Image 1 (cartoon, helix red, strand yellow):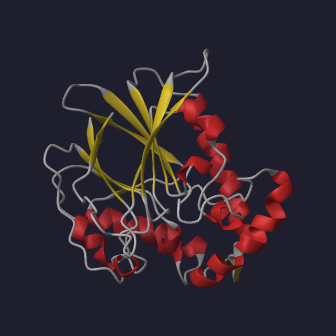
Image 2: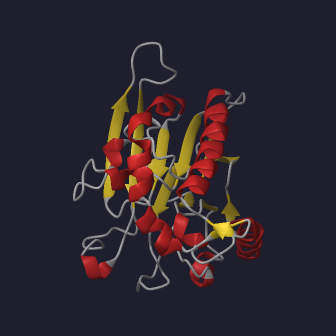
Length: 260
């Protein structure tokens, strides 16, 4: 199955017109598409199924508990499939059945291990201030983000470990990166990177392909697994666009596709 990948379009401020990639059998939106949700309508009537995993900025200035059902209703009205701790199966033109597992997978701040968690949580205050979201009426701070992250990980870990029968390939879709390998090379391994990536390397063997966004740079790498793992390797791909005024969108390929 050929998948078109888009993320971090930030259509609330960026001038970008998405178009269907030739030959794509599904479109995966890996978050931070439009913090206002208005321009999600650009994907209505898309010629192939659209799978959407929300990004952190989809919740800017919103109450988390209220936003989820509202975002789901918005997506349903446009014919988009929102995945949050949910899976779905699509059949490719070749007859293969592909399972997709989707969740935001917020930061748990353990990218560098438990000993560095508090340091990483302090570095996250900047991003909390940008979002200005709430959960149950309180600031959606690093503690709350971590609680959501751990719930996402628990679901994802179980889902990857228990694939149903008759599935030919598994694709994980998260907004946050699954490994330090996905860190933005402009910033590297610093505490702030734990607000963008998680140490989910141990989960990678459960997926043939792992799609993410959040980092405003593109990635396409393969992780090899030891003998005895469910898969010999996992391909990790991000086609995040980012902000044009920072030069992050230079040479962006909006028709980028991957095969699974």
